[in-house]
Image 1 (spheres, one colour):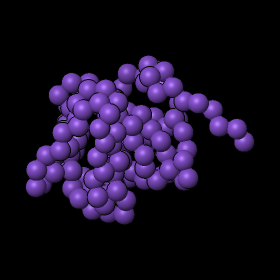
Image 2 (cartoon, rainbow, N blue to C red):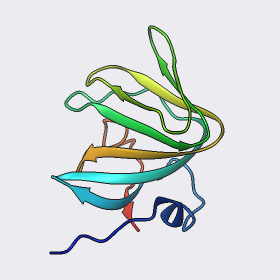
Image 3 (cartoon, rainbow, N blue to C red):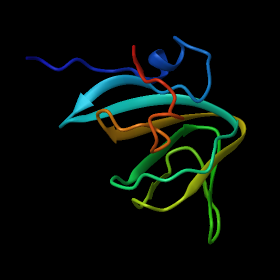
Length: 118
């Protein structure tokens, strides 16, 4: 199977909803996703997986119980598995996420946003 290039800006232009990850590619059993965020998400953790954030546009503050991490465009941060965190964006921010396929974005299927492929 031949891979296709993925234009992240083009994919991000296809939707306006926030905190709703969109799958744009698969990578070794992982979902590669883009998401638009604004405001505060909820405190959560992932007991079995790390949480990967790469800011494409805007600024993201990841609140941690022992201090915040702030990311700008081109910066990434990996929240270690089991660490409680709360993403916050004061302006609309575009993020690339990589998670194992099927992992809920809140660590809990009952509170997770649905992931759709675009």
